[in-house]
Amino acid sequence: MYAAGQTHVGQVRNQNQDAFFTTTERLGPLPNLFIVADGMGGHKAGEVASRQAVARFCNYISDAEQGSNYIDLLLSNAYKVNKEIYDMAKENPEEMHGMGTTFIAATIEDGRADVVHVGDSRAYIIHNGTIKQITNDHTYAEELYRARQITADEARTHPRRHHLTRVLGFDPHVKLDGFFQSIEKGASLLLCTDGVTNMLNDEAILNIVSGEGYVETRVQRLVDEANARGGTDNISAVLIDLRGFTTSSGGDAN
Image 1 (cartoon, helix red, strand yellow):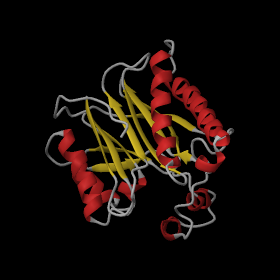
Image 2 (cartoon, one colour):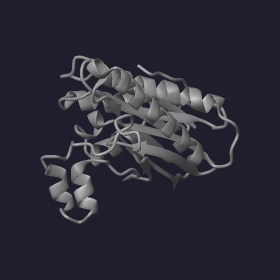
Image 3 (tube, rainbow, N blue to C red):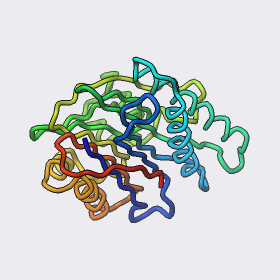
Image 4 (cartoon, rainbow, N blue to C red):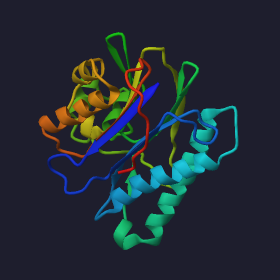
């Protein structure tokens, strides 16, 4: 297993409110850990939310006791971070009002990925020429679609398709999604913010991730292509490759 992450401010934004973390080494009781977060809020509140969420979550996982259920571990610590980000905003209303962040954290072991998720950042599994989104977007349009009130085509063009219904840190009682997904040897897991998915459709993502080259090269291509097609938001991606192209691992919350 090899992994790499990359982030870029994009072509329009003045600051990067995304954050990511990646390690293929053991962290606390987890065999590995991969995170992507996309912050929101006025001034620098979005940047604070995403970076604090990633840092605090990693600290909690690092100090956690061994347990048999990774999903419970991911969820319980994400809920702790949610409350802390909410309290930060409450204590600093002038600078941090409306602060929040999308959040995806995943760990992979024995042919399965355990995932905790909230917001519209996404996780995909890419394998044998196919791409599958394994997270649900927590947006107004997607909620309507899942309630069968609009069609999939209508959801893609709905005026409130970017209106988030759930994020980390905005609601102390927010519901987070926790689940596991089978992942075969030779597959890739991609975590990314909407700065990628707003610019690149599934076919473009599939072609880049399935291409030749080191995992660092392919994740950089995703960011570069999203920039080339407009880069209207911050762009972040973490690619975990079970094909074994390279030997690097590391972390970044910038």
